[in-house]
Image (cartoon, rainbow, N blue to C red; front, top):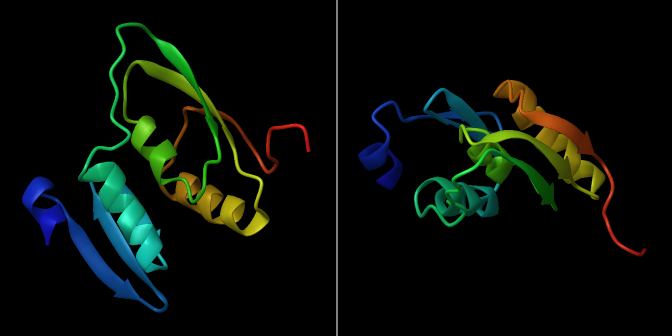
Length: 117
């Protein structure tokens, strides 16, 4: 598997209805093929990778299941961020992932969307 080629501490365990995947002191509960593909896109393909020369605050609208937020929390130049997810079930999945990974940089995580309606 490609993850273990990149992360020396990569582990995968089958637990009830999901896979528990861990690496870099992070843990992810993967419940669908889509979630696995998101994890791969973010942590293997580095689709969300960016570098800035100054400290910043991140505003992440549409947090989905929280994997990108966990990825962003690893950067030293991001001191805190605000996250928003309008779908209740998805919000709860993300919140579970944030707690499992003890993400402290999230200043605020709200269960609503941003926009006119």
